[in-house]
Length: 611
Image: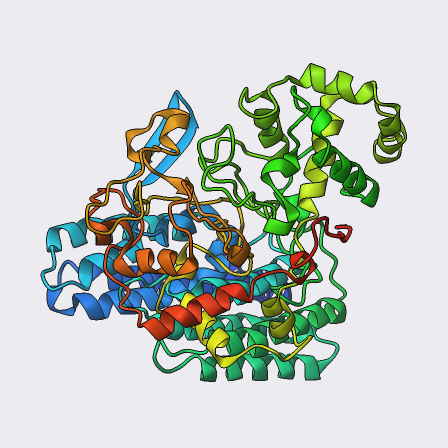
C-alpha cells in the first residue's frame, strides 16, 4: 500500500512538475523570441522563409499546371523580388545565379581554370515563357534548377550574425539597385515589368523597416521614410517607356539617401568599413558617392594630394619612355577628355579610351587583361610599341632626377623609390579623375536648373526604351555592375570592320579571346563609360564610328545582328530598338550633358583631392 501510494503521489507530482517545466520552457522561448525580436533576426528570418516558400511553391506548380505557367511564374517572381533585399546581401552568389541575364557565363581564372556555364534563373525563364511557342521541356528544366537553388537557400541561409548596420546597408543597397538597374528593365528584359517589381521591393523594405520602429529616437523620421516609400510606390506606375526616371532619382532616390543618413545618426550606428558607396553618400552623382579605395589595388594605400601631384608630373613626363618622346598624356590628352582623337592610337591596335572615371572599374584595357591600374601601367611600360622599357630602367630614370626626390619623400615617407611607388603615384593621379561635375550632375543634384526637356527625355530613353543602361549603368555609365561593383562586364555587340551597313564584316580584333583563347570570348570587349563621350570621338575599340549619330544608328539597328553580322554569342539584343529620329537626338543631347565642366576648355585641368 505504501508503495502504491508513493507511486500514485509520484505520478501526480510528475504531472504537475512536467506542466511546470513545459510552462517554463514556453516562457523561456517567449522571452527568447522577444529578445530576438528586439534584435530583428528571428522575425526577419520568419518573413524571409515565408516568402521564399511561396516563390518555390509557385515554381513547382508550373510543370503540373502548364495552363497557368505565366501566372505562376509571375507570382514566384514577385516573392523572389520580396526576398531580394535580404538575399542579395546574405548570399550574393546565389542571388546572382537566380537573377542573371540570359547570356553564356564564362569564368576565366587562368589557362587551367576556365568554366563555361549556361545561364538559368528568373530572367532566363521570362525569356523562355513569354514567347509565342513555349518549349515546356526547357521551361521545366529551368524551373527545377531555380526551384532547387531556392530550396538550398531556404535550408542553409543564416540570420543570426546580422547586426543593425547590416540592415542599413541592405536598405540602402535596395534603394540604389532600384534606381540604377530596377527601373531600367535590366531584370525584366521581355516583359519590362520593372516598375511593378520595384514597387514590390519597396513594400518589402517597408515590412522589414517596421521591425526597427523601436530603434528610432526620432519617430518623425520613421514616419518621413514611410511616407517617402509610399510616394515612391505611387510614382512607380504607368508605361515603362514613358516613365520619368530622371525625376524619380532626383526626387525620391536622393531624398531616401538623405533620410538614410539621418537614420544612421538617429540610431547611432557605426560601420566597420566602407563598401563601394561611401557611408555618407547622399547622391548617386557626386564626387563623394564612391569609395575609390574599394576599386583600388589592395596595397595601393591612401590617395593624398602629394601622391596626386607627383603622379600628375610623372603622367606628363616623356623621360619615362625609351625614346624620351612618349608620356601617358601622349595618348590621353586632357583637352580631349584624356583620349587622343585618333581611330587607333600610335603604336597599338586599338582606340585610346578615356581615363576619366577609369578608377571606377574592376578591370582594365578593352580585353580586361589587367586587374588594376598599377598592372595596366606595367603593360604600357613594357610594350615595345609604347614606352618600350622595363621597370628597372624606369626606377633608375627617376632616381637620377634629383627634382623628383622631394616629391617621393612627401608622397611615400620612409620608403625607397621603386617601380611600385612610381606606378602607384601615376595610378593615384588617374584615380583623382572622377569629377562628377557635368551639366547632368549639377542639375540632378539641384545645384543648377539648366537641363532641357530634350535632355531629360534622353536620360529617360537611355535608361528605358533604348536599353543603353542595361550595359552602361548609371551613375558612371560604364559596365561595372551596380550595386556591388564587383565586376566590369565585357560584351559582344558585333562591331564592324568599316562603317558599312550593307556588306558589313566584323572587326578582325578578337578582343578578350587573346587573353585565354576561350572560343566563346571572341570579339568581346569591355563596356566603356559614356561620360564625356561628346569629346572622345572616334568610337568603339577600332574607332569605326566618327559621330554619336553613327553610334546610335548602329544600336538602333540591333548592333552587329542588325547589319548582317551573325555572332552566336552577341550579348546585345538583336532586335531593332525602333527609336525615332527625335528620340535619337534626345539621347545624344543627354549624352552631351555628361561632359565635365572642368575639362571643357583646359589642357591641364585642376584636380580635386580624393580622400
